[in-house]
Amino acid sequence: MRSLLNKHALITGGGSGIGLAIARRLYAEGCSVTLLGRTESTLERAVQSILSSSSSFDITAPPPSVSHRTLNVQNPASWKALLRQINTYPTSFSPSESPIDILVNAAGVAQRRPLVHLPVEEVDALIDTNLKGTVLGCKLVGRAMIRRRPSSSPRRKFLDEVVTKEEEGEGTGTGGKVVEEGKVVEEGKEEEGGKGEKEGEKEEEGKKQEKKMEGVRERGVIINVASLLAQKGVVGTSVYAAAKAGVVGLTTSLANEYGRSGVRVNAILPGYIETDMTTDLKVPFILQQIPLRRFGTAEEVADAAMFLIKNPYANNCILNLDGGLSAV
Image (cartoon, helix red, strand yellow):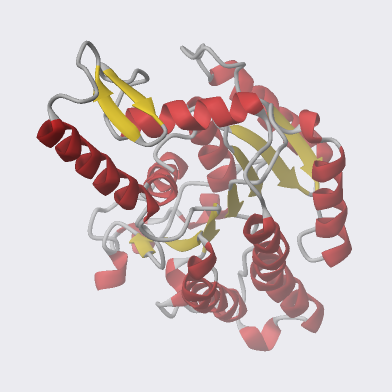
């Protein structure tokens, strides 16, 4: 998925923070995005911020779209309703038949007190949002990715072919060759002449086709936003850490389980990132523990997400992004 042109991404937690930063980067590269979250007003502001901060697109196809839908990630019925809506009203999501190419699970809630003082109801909420919500997204959206068929949209087919040729350095023309029923003939030459040269070209063409067919066809990419706390013990984060460790385990298992069907699954483990969830944590005691002596930015996490999304061999990558804190 080296090009994001004409792709479609769902982003949970897309109304703010890391989710919004990833959505903004995806949209800037020509990907249609659907922001998912609990609060309509927050999502509406996020959509406007993406549209107002993006430059014009230098592409011949219609520009990507930005939309939003409210979603309770903890609720299977909410996920199923979303997927039914995408299938029923595809044009409101993306320009083609709206398959889901990318899922980013970035929704999360934080924990701020020791386990002994944590109400059971808050334990449930932490696990349901941070772990169960990701499990449901991977299960239901992942199933849709695996079951998807090649798009019947002529425009999408054409764009996909153009992107493939550009990635392979072929251009959009035939390179001065005429292809007829599997035979490659140089223009201006008789078919009977140059038999050895023709055979060499056919062999080269065959190798090229074999190269294209190596491996499974990519059907989608899932990015799970976990946390450094899945690997590093910090007081007052026990249930949150357990949930995020579960996300890492889920990612590793699904990279094997889904990868065989062409769906790549990766995780990012951010450290302390400047978001609304960490505004009260930026204190000297914490900063001194980070080798780089600063918090990361949501845009830096988005950079990591883009690498994992676009690199077609990235599967089961568990990527720490913590300024070196995991080494301390």
